[in-house]
Image (cartoon, rainbow, N blue to C red):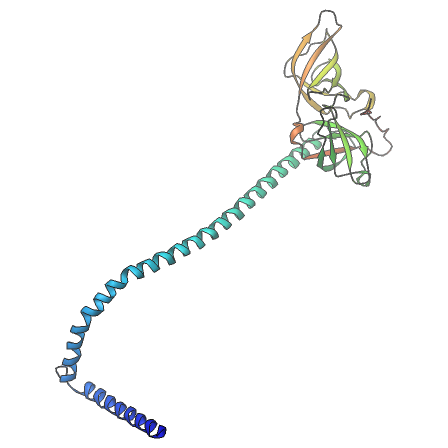
Length: 289
């Protein structure tokens, strides 16, 4: 019984195929005004309005799909653009840091190459890796030590001027006592004058030049440099400029306020001045004195 059904279905399918082939042959052979062509045009006239209505009915759904698809696409694109923006911002910050570092290193190189740089001295450039958080102890820590030739008492400078003196050292790091520390004393003089004195630090981070003879001429904006007296610091290193002077009637000396060239709050790199072999090492300023 089942076999008869299958045979019957195969016969019907074969008949339909033969009829379809015959109608296709008839369709392609008859003229444009033939029966089949006329029937096709009539069918299209009936179906077209239906297709148009269905298309109009589906437009809101199609538009909603396109809107949702565009929204997800825009969100994905925005996320991609945000990631690119973050990456570019990071690169800009990195480039600015490199530019600032290059500027500081060029300034330092220009400083050590100037004619006033002590003859036969070399220098070791170091990075600041630590700062003291106490107003009573103004120091920084650098990433060079005895392995690089750094020793106690050596003078430390930046591209702007005098920073301080090595007060402690290990094989690969060292501590620098800043000239703004209250225990720091720098024998100094006016660059273009005869006045001499001692530049001292203070707890408020300011500099004062004491023991300046009242008869000596000191003017605002005069440049103050190290005198080299006592061999505590290398001679001729710029310290700062005179801000103001104060004469006291009962004193033999005048007090001079100094604005340092170095911005101690923004130190990133410094150079340690290494004396030539055989040079007497400058005595160390004891930070505990």
